[in-house]
Length: 73
Image 1 (cartoon, rainbow, N blue to C red):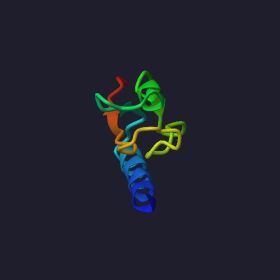
Image 2: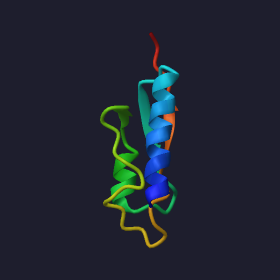
Image 3: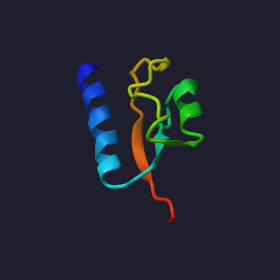
């Protein structure tokens, strides 16, 4: 879990260095409702929830990940 939190921070920092501003959270086909609800919108790097998601109820654990969203301008 601690390693995944470190990966989360490193991923966000990498996106910031590249000038990206938005991410989407990708859930799996069998993700729990909490994780699926995260995947509905895009998030700024300042507001993106930490992954693994603390409210995940999947027996397999949270398997969500980030995908950068390219914005114009």
